[in-house]
Amino acid sequence: MKYKTLGISFLILVIIMSCSNKNEINFNSNIHAHNNQLFHFGDSLNLTVESKYSIDSITYQINNKVHLSKKLIIIQTDNFDYGTNIITQNIYFNKNNTQQKTTYTAAIIVLSNSQEKLIGYEIINKFKHNKLLFTEGLFIADNGNIIESTGSKNRTSQLVEYKLGSENFENSIELSKEYFGEGATQINDSIYQLTWKSKKGFIYNEKSFELISEFNFPPQIFEGWGLTSFENELILSDGTDKIYFIESNNLSNYKRKISVVGFNKLYTYINELEYINGFIFANVWQEDVILKINPANGIVVGKLDLKQISDKYNKNGVLNGIAHNPKNNSILLTGKFWSEIFEIKLNE
Ligand SMILES: [Ca+2]
Image (cartoon, rainbow, N blue to C red):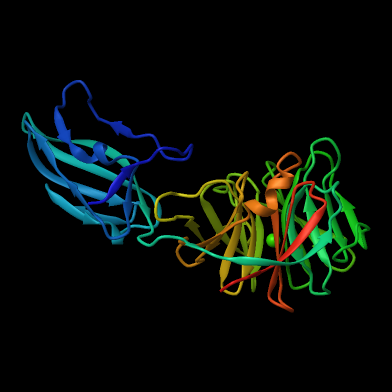
């Protein structure tokens, strides 16, 4: 069994150990010893319970889906999802000739069993970027122009369109001051833009920037951070380790979600996104890396180290903004208040 104690994460659930009648019960369940522990996919989890009472049965629920029933049990984590899994252990026992129940709950974190590869790249071009833009979303529209969504607390947030290398806008719209702009993407003729804490998004006509409609996030989504798309699906990050997939014709529910996992850690603060050739590329807030994520399971298969680019901008703002250029399969990168956009090509 390979597991490590998790050092960091505001997300990880604190163990909830609830007893139906705490003062009277004396159980020794080892499930709480596994709480918040990191496993690699396929590792075994050995659960035991001892008690002075006669145990009738024990049931286990994993993510409210899988039900098992045994006194001593070995659970293979390849039944689990990548990321945080909640195991609930219900112990049914006999006391004074009546059946009673006590319940323990633990969070088990399942990680990838392969290391992230370092992806090499070369900078093939540099372009001017308007340094007044606090970049939250970046992509290339069907007409080849850059679309950028910006956030601001002191000024208004914007959605702007410009030609690569130009600091002047072809088109722009300002958000009402109550909204902080976040990720943006295009599906068909519509631009979707998130807001940070308002749990609301906006849909604009791609050509005119006319506001078509608003939508509310599915309630499970914490905040609006990054946004990209593939075919008719929005792909959204919310500042946690989660990425959500939402069909554009059903914006009030999410279809599925993944948790972003590496070999040694759960990645949190997932920020701006870009769907590139079957993978999701993601900024991580306040880090000099971009992750390459398998959209099927959340595994980080590769990582770009962008320290050489972002070092000079540390005082001004963080690396954020990824746009795929399908014409030459290059990637445009920038950051919040950066004066440059970098064009890179991956060595893979
Ligand atoms: Ca993007």
